[in-house]
Length: 318
Image (tube, rainbow, N blue to C red; front, side, top):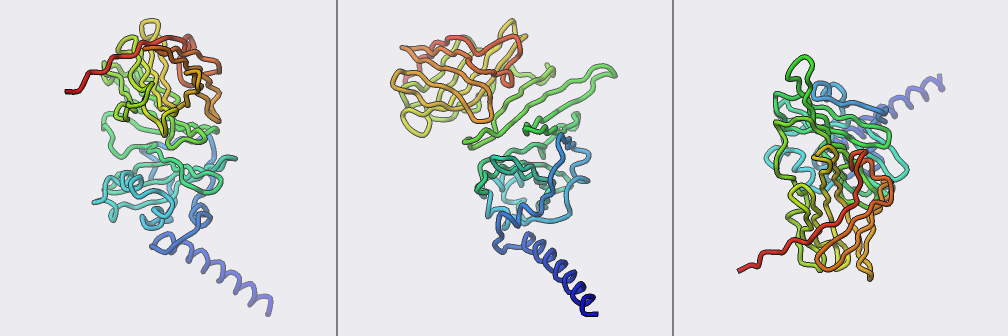
């Protein structure tokens, strides 16, 4: 009888603990990173999340804005919710987690107005927030089918597809990965055959950053072959974005990253987790680029990051 009572007590205690944990995530009380991550079950990889099954895959546990903002910057979280006016109306649910040696990815759904988006958050080994990425967008073109495939690395590949005939599929695939030390997910795959959606202008993701330092500016060959260099954390640190198209557009490459220029006016792009290594060499009015490591994730198989570009003269401000 005594053992039976003890067993019942343990079961009741366990149920109470689960209820308490759920209530804590639902409210506004402080929680630990361990309590938050316990609400996410491990995601079996490779995985595919589509716009048609995101609702079915998510967990029923609710996470309040007040709890998640204890770990994720409010500006990031509010943007994923669609703006501050939607914060109170958005339901946040865990979908899964990916645990790696360098940290943990939490895959989370955001639902309002019957539309569900999915985001990935990366936390380092100390459970410090590092970056976020919307991997299934809330705003979608109704003519397209959206999905995200996640491999074991993990790389998150956003797929946008539509059939124009029984035998012709138009697609756009953008792959993103987190590289140690970064403050955002980096694009590592960029493929499309959707000519109707292609733009003659190349999107430069760092174009709005300041360009006051010595080597900052645009280095160009033409509109489809260029390097943008922008001010970084100090006078020697820079952000860069490369885009090139060779062999009449048959082979393209694109890479966004950062480097530090040494006393010899040379720099190296090298990030943990990315086999790509590129040497940069600055001279008067130009920059030379030479690929040293395997950069196949960022370009086609028949072209390399090897070229020289001339610095574009800045227009003088009146």
